[in-house]
Each structure stands twice: as structure tokens, then as C-alpha cells.
Length: 289
Image (cartoon, rainbow, N blue to C red):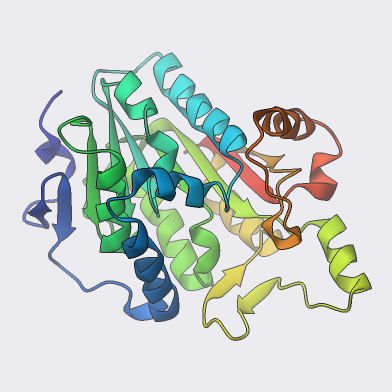
């Protein structure tokens, strides 16, 4: 494992604690105060409680589905002809970082950089993946709109339901940062909440508001589900991407949450059929930079 120092901009980061670096150039969370405070509050409750943290993650994502996606990203990195030792995967808005628990240990030649604006999230991430056991995993406290990384150093960029909370100007800034840090022909995976036709119908029948874009009422958080505006932005910056759909049987809004692996595998299979576009919770952007 080579030094991590080669990927960071000069004099931009400092060590906060074992396995966590902090961007010294800026303050974070000021433009997303409601979301920042919510993320901090949730994560602090689970620091030092890894088993409870992993269980909490399964209340928000299908464990089987998302683990399969994570392994697919690793497979892409391993298959690249130009791959070198110490390939770098960057997780933007990593949250707990739970997707990479165990996986990062299985693939020690790949470096995983976990980025989040919540220090509590990163402390929890380190609780799940202690630096002594995961020396190839590093956490970085920074703003994903201005990442203190050198150009063309990333082999795969991964982000799950993080960019959907950024208004257009900030979202485009992140897209441009992804383009800047990605190597030529690097991989890309972005998961985004889908405007699910079936859910929209159910909400309409019961007279409830199905939020599509803007500040969530009573919460202060911004949310924009995947739409033509976002796809147009992607087309202007990325080439060779395509859309897929996932979490067809997993809908927390309808209390459809299951830890059953058989249901998880059924979810994976349905995600590969024509039904997925009608019922899936997530849109997935798979591609190359």
C-alpha cells in the first residue's frame, strides 16, 4: 500500500484522529444545516455500536441489493486493463460507510476514501472499520463540492442517495468535481431516489403529497428525485452512462422493509426486468467518466 499523501492537494488536510482527515480550508454544513444536524444526531447515537449501526442501515436500504452493487463496482475496478496497485474508490457522502464493511478487508490492494460533511458519520464509519483492521480505508471530512484531491486520481466514484439533497447549482458543482478527480475511463455509480409511478399512484389515492423537488415540508431538507433536469446535466458532463433500477421490493415509505435474504435476492432479480422502472425505489447511474 503506497502513501495516501499522493492523492491530496498540498496543505489542504490535517489528521483529526486515527484514520480520519479533516479539510482545513473550510467550514462544512452551513448550506445544509437541517440535513447536517440530522445526520450528526443519528450517527452519534450509534458510535461504538457497530451491530446496531448496520441494522439501522438496513432500514434505509436493501442490504442484499446494495452489497451486490458494491461487489459489482469492485469487479469493474479489478477488470480494468490499465489497473495498477492501490486503485482508489471514492465514496461521496458515505454516511456510515457500511457498504464496504468486510469488502474493503477482502480487497486490501484497493484504497477506499470515505467522504462526508458529518464528522459523526465518519467516526461511526471508523467504528465499523477500525483503521488497524482497515488500513486501506481512510475517512475525509470535507465538502463534496470542493474536494481537496488532486486531478485524475480516482478509479471509481460511488455515491448513494447523497446528491439528491443538493440544489441544482451545488449538484452541478459536485458533478464537475467528479469529472476533475476521475481518471480516464474510470467507473461511476450514483444511486438516486426514483419518481416511482406506483408510489405516486398510491399517494394520490390516499390524498398524500408525493414529494418530487424542493425543500421537504417540516424538515428543512432539500430533495429532488431523479428527473429530466438531472439527466440533462449528466449528459452534458458524462459519456457512456446508462440507467438501471433497484430496490423494487424495498420501500420504507410503505413500511416494506425486510432483512430476509430470499426477498433481497428476489429484489435483485426484479431489478433486471421491465417491471423495475415502474416500482423501483432507486435510479442508478452506471458509467464511465
